[in-house]
Image 1 (tube, rainbow, N blue to C red):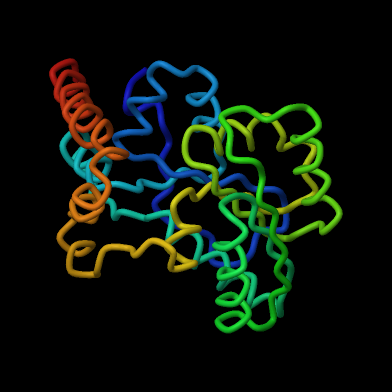
Image 2 (cartoon, one colour):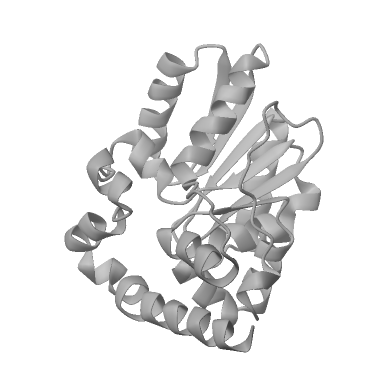
Length: 236
């Protein structure tokens, strides 16, 4: 797998899509995971929209190809599509993932910020793999609502692979896998301030708060990603 094999999206649509669209994000950690996970790699490659959610990806684009791009976070993706749906004179949005507590807070916030949108949620079991019955219940919950917009928050690569495996059975126009954005938007986990985001160091305060959960992506995946980018540069 090579970095240039991923076709990045640097400009998001300006109107809400009328045909099915799958949007995902990529950062240095997900890139490294995809190197050893064929299905995750395929899920990312098949994305209609794949945004650079990480300063490492932004740097790699500049370092390898002298192409200047901007970071587009999962949080940006979430807000952008909510705005597009709101401008469309309203619609239906479904949140699949996270806890009932977080989902309840999300409903409250969407109702305040995007009053023309109809919101529904579903909290799947917290486990690495779903049974056939659990998977069918998730798909049924989404399809009975027939949302315009589906957000999936089950952490990577689980969420991207779930969407990839089930997209043909989902009655929805736009699907976005956005992971931790559920907790950020709900307020159950505080997103780093704009100061850190502007510096390109959003990862740093998150790592300090949750070192046990994030040590692998910051201390293993990031150096590995840098090594892979430099190695690829030498072959160009």
